[in-house]
Length: 358
Image (cartoon, rainbow, N blue to C red):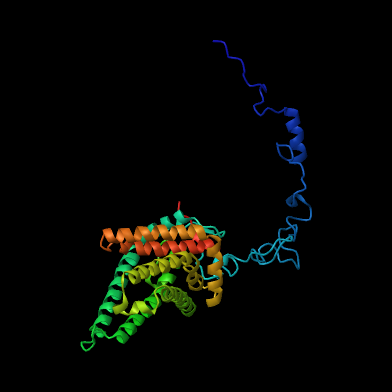
């Protein structure tokens, strides 16, 4: 049988090189392969390897060598130093009392630009409420039970059989004041817990009192309540007048005037609510003191006034209708949703970190 021709394009030499050329290279370098040409790389230089390294690979005298300084400890080539990972200065949110992010399970956070996304805040409110149902739903139930129990106790204390109405008005006023004071104190912890919920997907009971700014938050809450009370009381006194307090002089015109005054007072309270509702959050977040919180809350809310007003009017109507239909049971869900949505909106308009809810 005829032998097939050799298909190697290099002939009998499978390496593809000329035998004579290979022999010359081997004679010159001691190797069968051509020498690697020199380059300007540090390792090819005769004085040794990298800067500060001698020919034998050791460090030159007086040179600390690579790794002598930790990463980020000194600025290099005009770039600023960023500090070591985990050290102060690495995470600016941690310096402000916010937890450090970037760990598995942490939410996606952005810093607000002063504008508000109402629907994102509402989505966050529902998601956070049901993701932490044991805390928010059960906590709301306990809060309502406590307020109802205090109201019943105060009514029993105010009973006075010797009074024509059967109620001692002084004791009733004192009891109402105490209930309002207790609600304000509890609200300070609720504000703190809601802000921590904006920071992370899961919260603990201790988050309601850790990093607590009690006195500034309580001070702003009291001032906002006084502002609302003064406005409401002033409108009532102006519209209804002292004659309304005398049952013997009340007629159809006086009753119509009373309802008109109540409607006007409600309208004014609705119009100013966007400007006052976010003041307390600045104090609860530790960003401002009492007067700074009032100033920033008014300024940032005024910039988004129409959107905030529409949000509060629509949610107020929906909450009232839902409460009537469900005999108040739906409030166990809607109240924490509304509170968490407010916390999210605050972070947006204040330019602070908040969760992205898609």
